[in-house]
Length: 331
Image (cartoon, rainbow, N blue to C red; front, side, top):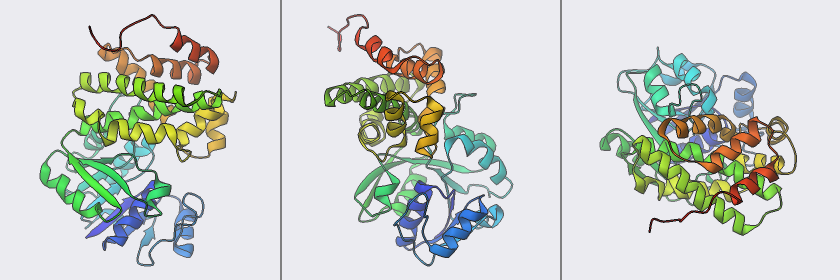
């Protein structure tokens, strides 16, 4: 198959390598000329995925039109904040029914829309799907065993994408619950910021476990209220993705949270991580969604206060611990 990966960040490059190893003809697009020159010269992304050598057969370009026309699959791998603008630029070249699988994670703050809805709004003629799960690029790039889920509007599309990506180290499941997949993928980044903040404050494993379990409770309540399926949040794109993002040092959200817990501002933490911290962009949208659907989300609320209202991280932690007494399950 002929595939283009739109976006040359660490995740896009890891997936491009995987697809190439699976025998597909893979092209990678980036708007940054110096990035394409580096990939053409070194067959390696020296900045985002150092040490991961890419197949010689892969090609690289800044020509968006050539990257889209005639391709069997388009993998949209730009940061969430650039999904709308990139989709807008793509739309004149996309054919009717052409499959676009989005692999970014986020919710647009202004509209509270998941990314697949944004792509469909910008490119109505596309067949949009999502791929998500506990999938750090650093490990996929080294062919470490990984599992994920592809969500699509119809089973045929999901199974086509499943067949494109699946191999001996990358296991892919299918699901019709695109909304649930995207809600879990977006909000876990906000909870991972909280987990990182707790690490930065010097808290331990008990705290991490509490944030993961109460975090998935918040995400599930909102996701189900929005129309997602409860079982999605108990699966790979819910609790699975949340665990890996809260626990791994590959997680830019956790790393940024650690710095904030140690006393740095949000901007200082983002500057030091030197990568897009998706949880910062999803936090306000998550808070707006909780208000829209009337869902209590205390962890998400405290993260917003720390990020955007300069609330001391230690004070936010204490406010979570000192909330009114309540049961975990109904009597």
